[in-house]
Length: 73
Image (cartoon, rainbow, N blue to C red; front, top):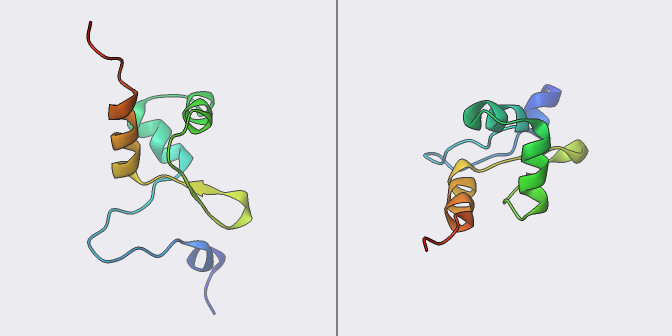
């Protein structure tokens, strides 16, 4: 029988980066949970998971952040 973690893990094709948890994204960028929540409210891409969880595709997050940079004057 599969464990709970195995049942709720999002399956990704081979060669595709795994989805990050909120804690992993926070650690990667050195930001707080509040900041990540603000990013999500502003449109940061998120993959919903079972039990109201969420995961982040790092490539999609990086692309979104690049689009959020203010234009040079």
